[in-house]
Length: 532
Image (cartoon, rainbow, N blue to C red; front, side):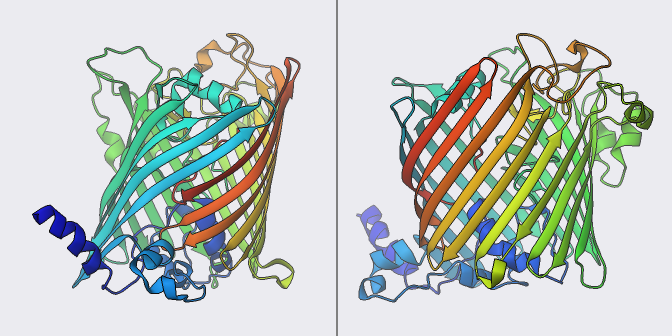
């Protein structure tokens, strides 16, 4: 009787409370990047665009963020009903009491598709729940749980069977009918001291950069535990991340679980100029193995040290990386951005041009345009990514730049050049996006290590010199996706969509073609990358 009373009373109670989207972080799905990108392209306050996920309280200072999360259609009679409001305008459960706010929503990703080339039906069946809230705009928390069953197109199916993980979503169980079962949970607890200091303890993902891809740290891999301390003052923002990653490649005792490895990342971002149109960000990170004779390396806990000199002074076998991110708002609605990654760098070897294996660098260059030709909500983005062979590799899987059998940066690994182009348009609740991808890579053949597979040890490389781009099996990848969507509930990100993907991967071994027609209903929260 008491349970029945609560099931009836709680929905009635929360439906009478004031309405306002109150999540602490903006979702990392591309849908939200399209919504907020136009405002960020004209911002002059110095918003730090390259540290994601964005804090919603900071977005509210430069754009009508809550208005973007509200339904603006006709207020039909049925929308005044409980079901109508919950479907189109509100969170399922929401509490607004004094200084405490709480939202609870279901998560869905229900998709059906047909792979035409193979005559194969595919599907996604994701159900979950999301809980988020805050107290006095100081303490905030969130948690999300997903349960999934999925059947993939052939090229994704092959990768999942090889690595036993779904890209970005963790380890799988193998079911009948070529179906996989997997689940994941993310969550965090944070404290925002004031506008200058913020602390977050979470199991989740991060993204450093302004592009669709990041060569420094992306949300491509599975979630991981981390502690982030973030400090903002004048034109500077400084963030330090302490993370725990998984090495799933090394044989391990069934009673001890997968081996762990650790990483510390520093990211210093500075706005330049009176109008803050230029942003420069310095990245440095180090990954290390917690060997018995070392324990946890306390030097890497110091947030104010440069990691590379410390790593050298310890004569350590650790993997240190340096990087630069640049963003420039060149004109109203027009942004150029780029990244430089240095895994190894010797200027003399670069000048010599002999193809030294240790010339391990990555480059990115991109452009974003918003409200093009004076048309509101018409956008375009183009991006080029270039990564040399052996980049992100190290001696063992305890030091390579990976987590849970997935790259921490780009899903193509290394030894590739990629071009991406997006065109998108929104009208009221409707959206349309066209995406094109072209990539050239050099695939490793057999057991050889020619620099593409970043899980291999660089000590197994074929030669010290003579290494060139696309060495190995030169492979071309071409993909096109067209998608039409309709936003049902902006507050929760509930979207109805349909689309077509055409993909072709070819090399001397043959051609693999995929044509997928799909439609579905999803909650736009996380970005999952199947374009590899």
